[in-house]
Image 1: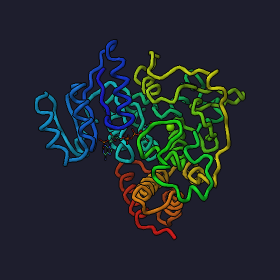
Image 2 (image 1 turned 90 degrees about the vertical axis):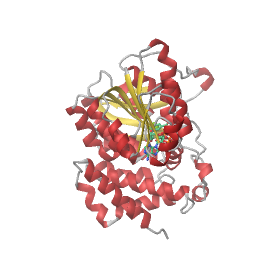
Image 3 (image 1 turned 180 degrees about the horizontal axis):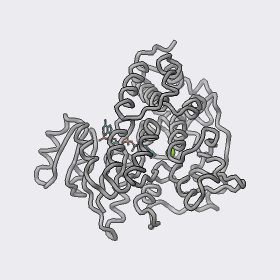
Image 4 (image 1 turned 60 degrees about the horizontal axis):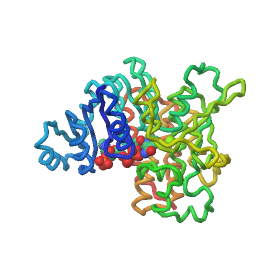
Length: 388
Ligand code: NDP
Ligand code: MG
């Protein structure tokens, strides 16, 4: 099986390589290409271990060093956004889409045209280009498999089920590090506090998005497009143990849930072995030791992202692009210390209310070029807005 990993040096990329490393003795895996950005130490290490045909760094500044240090090996070295897009055109059996943020959208859409299976971790592709992604997969008969634990869970629950029998899907959320904090404490929360996720180990950006619950908001949009659901079929419940990864409720009031350890290697292995199930690296759950699974309603005052996303879920227009772009800039501004933790949702709300952006509500982008333009414009606006 020929494999490409986009975002190989990140949290999902490294977990993917771990799954491959573990299953390699019993499988014919061939890594065609690995891509990264600035973590070239990791990229070099993995290139030597997995002997891909091609290694790509998104950043031209890393090209020379990568080329020199991988010179003894028979590996093609490339750099830049264009090279990443070209890599998406290599024919592969299985692709992992795990670049973080909007930069992962174009390569994912391109890979869907050339690969048999695309495992989607980059939720931004669904948030910003859900309609295009699903239509492209249909047109090219490409299998899309969700890696995000919630969507992977829903996908598993829906196997052999009639999609019309779904009443709603219930995404579980851990509640993040501020589940029990006061609003006042959240107002002055630091980056380090936001990075202290209680149950999952992930890349920095998605970890802070989990603390604001912007991650859950993005996941609602992701579910809408992946499973073709209406806004009122999408719900969130806080489940601090992160053992139930999500649930589907059907018209007969039966509910199917998928449970598992909070280890992304389980979801990744599911997509790698699909439609089979193979022994995984995640630990078996010991229910007696766990004791209890609990649930709470999310607090919309503390997590306005869950309120703001509702207008995006109701429209089929380009608001997903605006929501994501504003969130990415808000996150940059929080990480740089320019704005506070709760200012992130204030900033996103202001961008969504910007007259030029409101118009987008009913205009569905049909092409990636439109999405890129809209993303750039929303980012500009989000950078310029001064919060009082
Ligand atoms: P990380 O930040 O850990 O890794 C991101 C990857 O993208 C790295 O390989 C990084 O390279 C690369 N990258 C960064 N900027 C660029 C760029 N401009 N062009 C090309 N590549 C770039 O992120 P995660 O692994 O946590 O997340 C990846 C995606 O998966 C996100 O969309 C996230 O929402 C989603 N996801 C992640 C989960 C998790 O458990 N981590 C769970 C569910 C979904 P480098 O490090 O070399 O600079
Ligand atoms: Mg998730």
